[in-house]
Length: 300
Length: 225
Image (cartoon, rainbow over all chains, first blue to last red):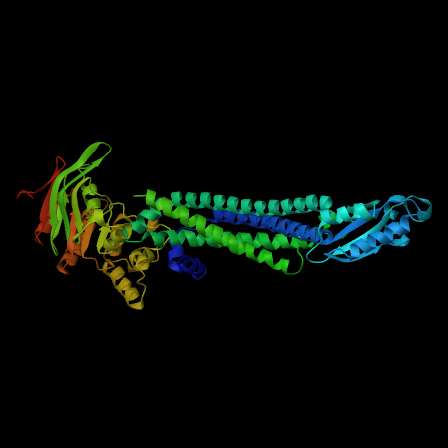
């Protein structure tokens, strides 16, 4: 709470305390530029994380509640086996609905591979049954055993082998995005620390004068902390605005483009980048405060 | 007020000051003299807590400096005005802001204090130079500005390290008069100087004790001064 109060005074400020540290135009601009670059990259890291999160959720949800039963049988037995399979599924706890796909639906599934006008009736294509689960789901092992006994040509595919690697890949991508975000924050902290240490070292005479007239360490540190916090905040805000504009110019999400065209922000996610200047300010505040305290302890 | 008891100070393996026992009583006027490099500045720094003794005790206003934290030392420095030989200003701030610096760091920026600042700037004869930057001032003007900064908080003690080192005789007399005037207001004054003429001039106007540093020790100077 005390730290929060000190952070808020950064924006209210003490004009006289600010003036005791000489202005440094060039290094100030470098700090703002570096913070802006970090803010810009942070927007993309954030966009990547959020997009990967959406993808992981979509893949997980789309595949989690459905499975497919494939029935391969001679033509004269196929209808009997379909009927037997549907009976088994109707009495299986955890199965909400089950229905055999029509010829048109099966043709549509194969169309991307064989083109239109596929003579489905002349090909030994297995019959597919779409299964939708209840929220509790069914027991795939038990269902497989029952199907093996009553529908010998049936093969149950619960999509697990597809779903798991896809969800894992998306989750790792999300983790990668957040790791990049944290690394950007760490790099910004390191950059501000170096800049603050350099400023403190260049102003040892100022510090000596302030100590001579009775300034406490908190007063001296405050003059530097406020300056670097505002630079970090301003730079991160500029970078954030540039990053958001760049992300908004990315192509909109399309099925044909796959993952790459869905990299932007969706809905309330557009508000997330507003946190970046705040985080930039907090990182700069903490880094400068630590550097100033360390340096002031070193100085006589 | 400021008391040094069996104080020693060593630096870089060598002892600069040894067995020093001095007490600056309230309202007293002291000179500290000795050859260059004898340790006058070190002695002054010990007196305002800028250096800690390697042996013995330094007490500022009855508090041992070793037992003070950094904030305590900062608070005590507000009761001790210091004039350095090289003055030490913030060169990017005008003279009046440099003089007001002790008020700013202690959060005393009221209108009354601002009025006192104007009076003080006039008292040291810098009214027309108040807006100038420190590098634009002459040696004497810098010393007077440093003196004004040292006394703006109305400190109990004023320590002046070679305040007349870079000024002519006329200006050194003027600075001396300002310090004597402060002493008559009840301030404790300690002036480090190797200028014996200045000491003689002061002794004719004020009751001053003269301390001499020789062979790492401080002794009370004799009647030859």
